[in-house]
Image (cartoon, rainbow over all chains, first blue to last red; front, top):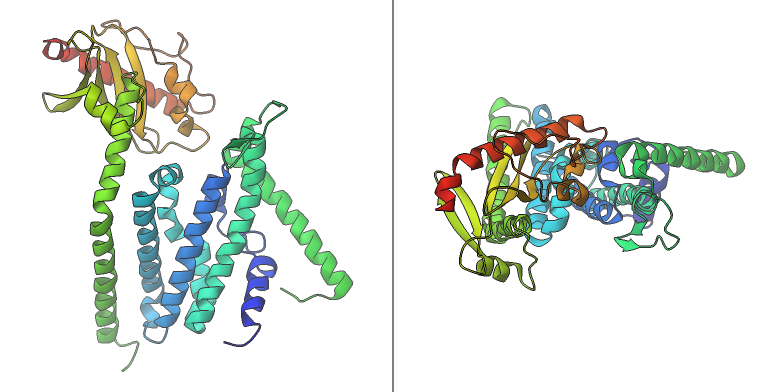
Length: 208
Length: 193
C-alpha cells in the first residue's frame, strides 16, 4: 500500500464523496435511527464493521468470484457479516439491539455496502478495500451523529440520555419523528455543498 | 479455470454458501444461550411490570419471588403472590397483528378480574416515531386501572387516548387488547379456582 493512500481514502470517503451528503446513500437508516445519539453510534459502528469486513472479503475473493453471480455473492458476504454483528449485538447489548429493532438486519440492504463492493472492493486489494470501507462507514457515522445530536437535543432535551435541558424549554416532537432527519440532512447537504463549491472556486481544490 | 463456466459458477456458489453458512451457524449456536437469557429477561421484566411489581434489586430474583407460572388451556399465564396466599393478579400474554407486524406483550388484570393492572409490549414493529409510540410509558400507563366490564369493550376517548397520526396502530392495540380480555374472561373461573 502506497504512503499517503490511507489519508487520500480518508479525505475522499469522509468529505469529497461522503456517502450520505454527496452520494445520498443510506438515507433510510439515517431517518430511522438518528433520533438518539446512542442508536446512531451503534448503527455507525455496525455499518463500519459490516462494510469494512464485507469489502475486505469481497476484495480477497475478487479473482475467484464468477462475474455472472457477482452481486448475489456480494450479498451473501454482506449478509454474513451483518448477521454476525446482529447476533453479537443481541447477545452483548440487548437494550440497544431492541432499540435498533429491524434496522441492524437492514444494514444488508444499505446501499453503501453494495456501493463500496461494486465501486471499490472488486478491483482493489484487500487492505485498501478494508480502509475504504472503514472510512465510508466513518463518513456515514459522522453525519448520523451530527444529525442525531441536533434531533436528540431538540426532541428530548438530552444528549446520550443525559438531561441537558436546564432551562426546561419545550421539546419539539417533530424532531423525534423521521421527517426531522429529512430537514436536517437537507440543510447539511446545502451547507456542505456550499463549502465545497466555495473551496473549489477559491483554491481550485481537488474535484471530488 | 474459466471463471464464467457453469460448472465453476455452481461449485463456487455452493462452496461459498456452505462456508459462510457454517460460520453463521457456529456463531449463532455459541451466542444462543446469552440471547435466550436476554429474551427471557425482557419477558420477565414485562410480566413484573404489568403486575405492578418493582424489582428491589435483581430482576430474576424478584420474578422467582413474586410470580407463579400457571398453565391454562394452551396458554402460559402468570399469577402474582398475594400477602395472604391468594393471588393479587394475573399476567396474561397478548398477541395480535399490528399495522406492520406482530404486536406481542402482556396485560395484567386484578385478581377479581374487574380492572386492568397494566399493559406492556415485548415485541412491536410499528413505525418509529408514530405507531412505535405505543411503546412509550404515557400510552401504556393510560391502561392502568381501566375497569373491565363484561360485554363491554374498551374504547378511546374514555380516559384512554389514541396516538395522533397513528390511528391504525392505536386501533390495532385496542383490538388486540379487547380480544385478549375477552379470551381471558373465558378462563376467569379456571384461573380463580
